[in-house]
Length: 129
Image 1 (cartoon, rainbow, N blue to C red):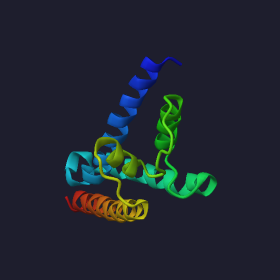
Image 2: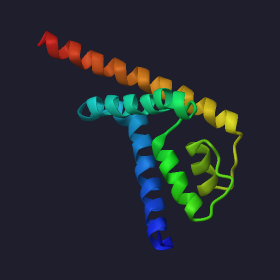
Image 3: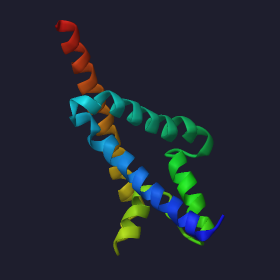
């Protein structure tokens, strides 16, 4: 595959994966996106914890695909954490991997709980009407 196409795919992954992550974190807030948010958060959990049984806990197929592209472009020493990768790629800061992982998991479970809660409350409200 030529370098131009690989750079385009890299850009796509940065935009798409980062947007999906932001949607996972904030999508539960808006009534119109709550159901879709619950689906994307659930798919993220399935990737991390079900596929993670086979590929390592926290496995994300989007990260895997993106890292394959980056390796084709010659990148080396890419951190395991996609969030650590983004921080390092777009800043001069290199936080400890354990800190990034702990914050990521904590935020994820808060978001998962929030998404489940607001979706359940929406169902309860709908049934009362």
